[in-house]
Amino acid sequence: MILYGDIHNHNAHGYGEGSIERSLDIARTHLDFFAFTGHSSWHDMPSMEGERERHWIDGFRRLKDTWPRVQQVIAEGNRDGEFCAFLGFEWHSSRWGDQCVVFPEDHRPLFYASDPEKLRRFCLEERALMIPHHLAYPKGHRGVNWEVFREDCTPVVEIFSEHGNSEDDRGPFAFYTHSMGGRETANTARAALDAGKRFGFVASSDDHAGFPGAYGEGLMAVHARDLSRGAILEAVRARRTYALTGDRIEVDFTVEGAPMGATVAAGRRAAAAFAVRGRDELDVVEIVQDGRIVHRAHAEETPADFSKPIQLRLEWGWGPWGALALERICDWAMQVKLTCGRIKRFFPCLASMPFDEQRRHRFERQGEAVLAIRSYTSRRNAYRENPNQSVVLELETDANARLELTLTEPVAQSAAAKLADLARGSLNFFTGPFPKEGWQWHRIVPLASSSVAGRCTLDVPAGKSSYAYLRARQKNGHMAWASPVFLNHA
Image (cartoon, rainbow, N blue to C red; front, side, top):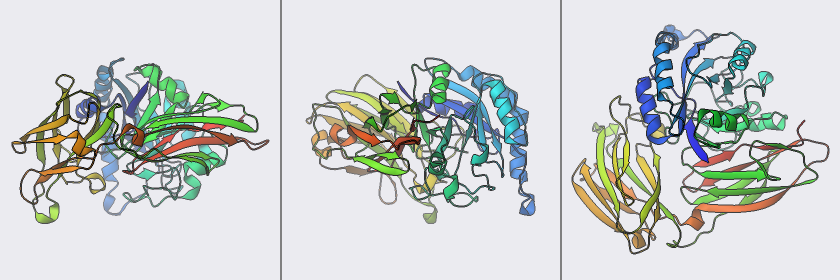
């Protein structure tokens, strides 16, 4: 089974916002698992003008002071078979790069170290994960230091988060939202793979607003045998993981029948197979081997076939911006009803902002054809300036069916849309005159346009190790990276 989670995120138990109880509640709303990784220490923090280092120091003290409460909330929040919660902390280092420690057990201690070897010994004793993140910042400025990388408690690395994309220094999602500089070629995941290092890929949000799984800031998926902490950790250690920017793309990737993350012995040829199901139309699926794209596949651009499941996105938000002095938080309450067929699945796409300790997004099924939604939107501090929330619906229905949406907040409003019309184009609605909020039914995504499967043959270099991974991109820009399969590694 594919499970989705976030194992790197923050709140006010550190130098972020929000309670640990809120983080857990939000994670349970739309994820299968999460790990809270509170800010713990920065032993080689530089001096800053105006003693601004107090921002970090005070955050570290808050985590230490409230650690018993954090431990208890995480322990009580775990429910194998329903939702999995992990305890963790984040270790900063200018020289060695930041690391997230994720424990397999509850009620574990914080640990303070001035070098990565001491931290690694602690993680090995605890059987904890030690995961580097925002890899591609320059070395010495909290970027990864590959010289101290070891596989033993670091089976995976975080290649995407709210900082951006560390796969390569020329890929999309450049680093620019923080002060540690742009992407350094030598610190990218690709450079380390080319140097013979072996690791899988994950993404997590590194969100500081107490919002695990924040849409667009990073998400990870695991192929696990069941929804339990043991199964999730077993999948991570085996590198059966993949990284996502936000949309819950379903990915399967094998080489010689071995799953993503595996190490296999191969001759001069190896057979790769893949299957990708997006939440939007797929732009391209690529197989990358030893830093080169060796295969590309594209989904079909076909009309909607209602004999198969179709998908479409409901998006809400927009509204006034700060320059108009009308910036606000808008509460939404709505009910979506399908007049024929059923809502097979739905995929929340929940952005982190605006921060609010009390407000929540809620999705409630009311039978097979009705979904009730409570939400809120604002442009206030919106990540990369996108204020919107959305949900992707997977429907089993026919072209004559209608989607009926009834709003009770922010205004009383109702509208019906025929699926046959949505197969041809999107429909937009507004809650009042400009610049009031709006909502939109996106154009239907046919199964053939969001799915691609195939095979290709990899040429394996003689006498050398090799690696291959899958990279997928949707037309809306959201991406997935499957962990590499390693060929002929010692």
